[in-house]
Length: 491
Image 1 (cartoon, rainbow, N blue to C red):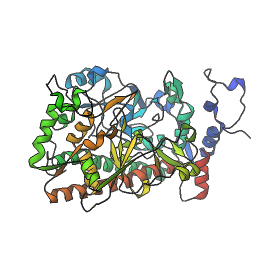
Image 2: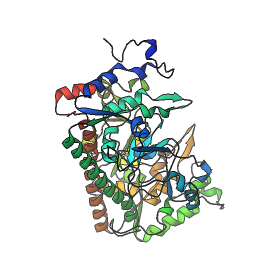
Image 3: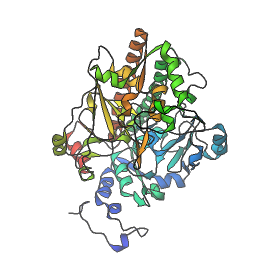
Image 4: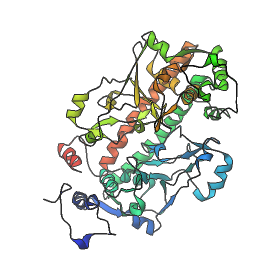
């Protein structure tokens, strides 16, 4: 029997001097053959050659340009769940943007595809009107579909997310130096486009509406923290000019600090940034400034950290092992990159409930990112680089209000100030608990923020879960059918 665990091919079948077995996985060819009756199998390279799709790569602008402005510079970690993050980790100035603007030419409707990296390769995001202007890095491909293309951007997005395309991506993903890359092998990807026009049109229509709804809700997520901090009075208001710039760490050219004010032998200047301290002080009139540590001492909040199960456990099953890169836009990714077996899950089972908040403790640009778990997210394990916060007394602090507060500009700035390098990565350590939360003094405002946050999260979660189902339906797979589940497991 020829399968991925062992197979033979003739020397004449070797292509482009590629001798990696996974590239020739016979199960992929068999699956594609089984789809021929119900699908038009279209090679991405053919669409490119016939000018139905245009592909372009981004630029590396250099680290010196990071943090010079508020125009997003999109990197591979900013792509998740068919969309871009609301808080990309790097912004550039108007001058830098103008330098690359014409050559990159990013428009609403373009699709960004991760070509280089490791577990992120194959991730896609459709650019919306909420995302521009932006620049994107060279590890991303930009696809633009022409009006006369036989496949629309919406159907293209669904087909590129189907299980068989993901399998092809993994098979063509090779290591180059210290990261993996698809190189130009993305042209070999075969897209399964349903022959059933009614099915194709339904998928196209639903994806279009789904992306639109999630984009609108994502814009609300972007505004909620500013509402909580008092920049605006509701998510219906536009953000004032300069509000986003307040989140950026501008640094401080110099200040004097008495040695008596040093804390825990910390000699890192930004930890004592007087500008940050002054901005926190201005909130005292309208907000109660309460540290996470105080909430823990009062029993309102509890915390825990995750575990490390070892790389040998990766890929042994279908239970998500949540890592720092699996958090985006206040939610978990629809397709976390590492999964473990039932046995490993039972041995290492963690106390996880709906309403728990995961906060990234270790990393670099991801430190401080957070999400709230829903009922569908509780059958998971989570890694040691994450803190789990649980509201023990929701009558005193709504967990959805806590999520909003953790993402306010002043809190994110505090996290940056307390984020230090340890070995090769940064960490917040237990300094997270020093962070002061700006809780609005107006109880009605707190209730409104919590309610809006809950409604947005619940709506986006349903749509996120639907994206996973649509990707399966492209191939005719329905998770209610046992045979289809077994077929999915095999591929």
